[in-house]
Image (tube, one colour):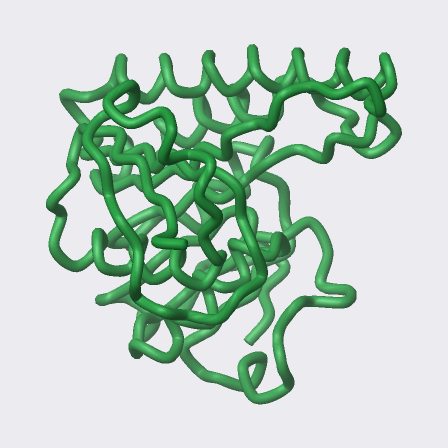
Length: 233
């Protein structure tokens, strides 16, 4: 089902209902697909409905609503946040300078999202923090400049989240090197950031990260914590 956000979403889509931001990404699309398999109602807010990373069967699934809009628009966020049980934020800006038009994408989105979640009484939020690899001589100055801005943006985003702990039950998931491997359900979780920095070097599949996100939605074992997830390889 597609929506251009001109009218309210169907009330029949309420209940076990998730909003996924960044559904176009390889991680975000994994979250959407696994959530559909687990019979969640999923709304994905995307900038365009062209070349969506889903199969025809998934797009025809009545539990999936694709909304075309912007995370930088409070009006668009109001439409998709209302009635949700949880928000999964997989947004990550492009590291290509010509594609990254807003250096404050994450923090600006988060500020609006906080306001809208609080206004609609939506408390559960899961955010994915992708670790950046060390700089190498192969990376251009434009890449370094972009990455530095992204890092500052991420830090501001997380500050905004934690400042609203009274109203938002957040979990910030630290993820190291990602792979396109299969779902194994065989991964490890470490405590809050700083307890296992070496573990960040162990690759984990996007499918396994998505699996943990949905587990956390169900059980809420890491509320107001920043777990580190990594593979077993």
